[in-house]
Length: 413
Picture (cartoon, rainbow, N blue to C red):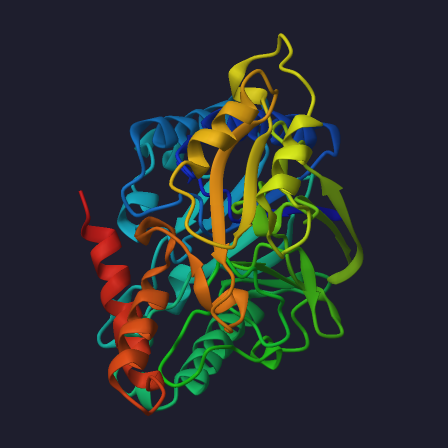
């Protein structure tokens, strides 16, 4: 009997884009996802991390998550849901789902790798998956985002080796339980070698001195690997069955050209038969003036704004979001006022202004001015380091910085 999976990741519930709440957009996505699960007769929903945008999501995001799970159980009682934590998620918070939903036996949430007697509890990562008849059709090694602490003592010396060993052990536990004709699957939330990274809303997940995990960490007999973290949907290398589903919404203006959606994977007799992408709705458009990466003179930006459509009667939450990138010959104190005046009565909402000054003899990218809120913590660290040290920032220091940053994000109120 065939087994149909729907692979999704990087929902980032609770996300805001330059001060704009994305809750209405996520509500549209979750409604579409429920409809898709029913229409496509999906057996298993795999969520490969970053359900939330932060370790302490707002109550509205938690409500969306719990409401989705409850509605899926009510309308699709045979659907199995397997969720692993991403680097943005709090493992404990993600695992603390409604006990009633857990008791139903169709929901499996893995926030972190537990340890028993000093060794990882690999059995807790292995989940059986049933086809439409109720027969076991596959086993998944449900591995969440891995921190050095999850990998045990000595992992910092050889993080890739430690990751490889953990996956090998988890898959071996699943393999030992597999009967003929049943598939092996795995999940991961990581940066795999060969994946394309969005410049503004992702970072390479650093483990020790390594920034990326090679795809051969996943054994060849694993039929499908559901990955999360990279927001651009893509297979990894030449393996069609090792792929990122991508984010469900553009999480920065840099991602506005991405094709956001989910992946449907069909397996039969233990092997991957087909993969196809389904495009998710995009209820709010993102636009940039100018459309390319380089900024434009103020007069050209104002002319482009003048050509934008006038405001219609639709809801505020559905209006497009706009960024403008302006090149200035000299400081322009009234820049915001001029842009906001030009935007009066326009359908789009101006949410970001990026400026670059000319005349210094340096590349525009070197002098782009951004507020501190727009800088990623790693960029702040790198700028500070480069200002005071001649040598490049050491990888081991960067790894410790991200470990500390993840701890702060989990503990922030």
